Image (cartoon, rainbow, N blue to C red):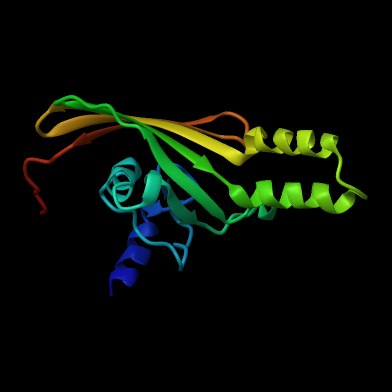
Length: 181
């Protein structure tokens, strides 16, 4: 019944759906378009808060993530980590990093398979693959509590394989009452 309700609601307004394609962890569905069958509604906890909690249980704070990407050469497996998380009483900031090992492994494997014999220059070329910026993504997220019932969220992220930054700025405010007539 919950899936039917989600499908009906998506016909009239955009809803946040859970998405591993962004470091923030959510994307908006398009109003009027059918809701993806394999999609789930985004949780209320922010992705950076989820990474903070999950990082305690994984060794070195490295959290594996799996997503089906349209670009097959990037690979569907990624490793995410919360690199920085300073906070004070009403403000916190988080720096999230992501690494895609499948692309690195396939590039190095292709380099070695095309070579006739091992040379020192091949190892130098391998280090070039490690510093390829399309393997990495980085995001900054900050939340400031203005009052006990409202807060500002700012999120920006950069994916190495895409040009430009992705920004999100939201004001969260808890409603005092609900009135339906």
